[in-house]
Image (cartoon, rainbow, N blue to C red; front, side, top):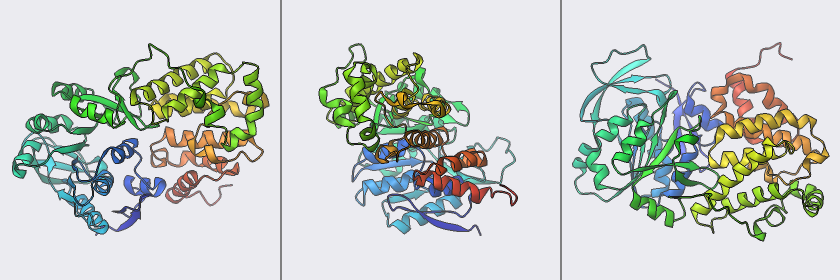
Length: 467
């Protein structure tokens, strides 16, 4: 019998997991006290009590459990999970949290009802549904499962209230799920979160398949937590999931301040006086240390582009502005900071670029900026800190530099890079150990890095003769 344990997430949700650090979910929950996908936080923000949601490919319930917490006892979470052992663990988690609103449906979802073969991986996140005629690959096991289509499931339900959200993580079977849900997707107007990247393959066919049904796709800007129109030209290698919805749902979400249907930078924004660093950042510990030099530079009119970039970032974080304005502001800030960095006006702008790029979802750009910043920090002098900048890691907004601005910046940059460049240290493995130890030696408290280093040492114990 497989040993299990109970882990508690940041929001107090309890999750029954397999007791092994070779399990992705177990490792990630110990490391981050949450799941690693930004989209989960967006779902928590978007959903409302009493709503009905479908989770296709629920696995151990990272989404299903969080969604159940939001929709409450008056809502419904139908969690489709065909692997019998995984479904059993999910049911245990639902019972443990008292989430009677979760209904675990131990069927797979496909193009039609019937049977299929489920190939089981060591990590249940990687289980795959295959038709009965395919040749099974070498795996840890094979399970014959029952399939349903969403249209058949809907017919079983009879008349039901609207479905607010559907999450689809079907390990490459997403097109079949869509094909089997034509009636449901025409009848209802849910927001859909779907996996666009399977392994190394980006399945842009899904965008077209949803578009044919009237569903426009949106990506997430994780900083302001807003959905914005999907732009394939900005496809990021870290992107796993995107959203889509019909125009009526998009309009409603825009009115609620959750989504920008359109935005344009043809007319540059003009930040107000209260958006400048002198109003927005002045009380942060690191800014208080640099305020005098920033003020002198401002008086000499030598930092206007940097100040404008920070003011635009402030607009993006201000929920009093409509979503379109906030997204435009963040996009303009990124472009301005890219220009500042490309003209060699000092490496400190890399810190602001990394922060803004990560917040708009351009994670590769953020990592590139962070790597360059980490290389430059040992050679920086006081003059490099004379222009306004954002801490590369949001957590460091409230951490004082302790008389070592370079050490503070290095610790912030390493933490930001560690979190941005890897979904989890589960995938980076032991090659991050030395860098994490160095970052922690700088003297700035970092629970996220301490957890990562601790897990790496548990999973890959240092050799007895290591120095």
